[in-house]
Amino acid sequence: MKLSVIVVNYNTCDMLRIALNSVIRAAVGINYEVFVVDNASADKSVEMLSGEFPDVKVIANTSNQGLAKAYNQGIKETTGEYVLVVSADTITGKKTFEKALEFMDTHLDAGGMGVRMITPDGRFLAESKHGFTESWAVFFKLTGLAKYFSKSRLTDVQRKDWVEEFQTSETDVLNGAFMLMRKEAIDKAGLFDERFHTYGYDIDLSYRIRLAGFKNYYFPKTYIINFNSRNNVKFSWDYLKEFYGAMIIFAAKYLFKVPEIKVEGLPQLFPSTYEVK
Image 1 (tube, helix red, strand yellow):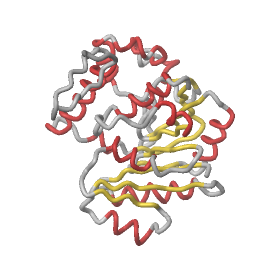
Image 2 (cartoon, rainbow, N blue to C red):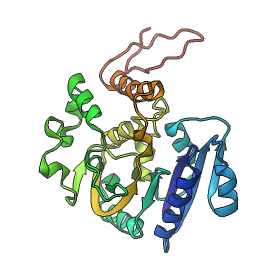
Image 3 (cartoon, rainbow, N blue to C red):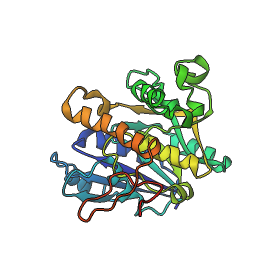
């Protein structure tokens, strides 16, 4: 198997239908498989999949497991040389898979890659290249974690030579809307950290892919259309909890060294690099 595609769905039936049709169109001539992990949608998404996409492998959860855990459920079932994590609110370009796989095949140091993302009205999304929003950039600078992301140029993320739309380059972080990863890189770096429920899971795994000795690339010679629906709901308590909670998890994971104190019945939230006897 050349390519395994994983889509996580949560009450996005109409967008999922469009996303899957674009994936199937882009996969013509490629040996591929598609998994949809449904996080207990109430909009009859699973019924739609059964009726309209019988070849898609469906994993139907009985509760919302979050993005990281759901993607891991799919990854564990894949057989492809490459694994693509793609959002349900995207449209994949007709030649996107062909061009992206060709790039990965000729860049053996690549653990992962992202592509040019545009909005439905044709506007370039700068986070295609550095993979995170301005809020994350500020967070990295304030915590000192910016030193781990040398190529993201956090001191001036709007530099023209960094956000240039058509410049192929190495990057620190892949955007979760489209993460094409070499299965070998995932095997070495590990799966998504399931403590990241909705945000930050892509940043964390991108960083670990680099720690595993691979490079991440931004490849602009193809594209996806991204409706960016996940980031359109803001200033709710759930958004604040998920978004800023992910930052806290990331800081605790890479900035602090927390002793591992084992108390029966109380899980260790942030495993440490050393243990108190």
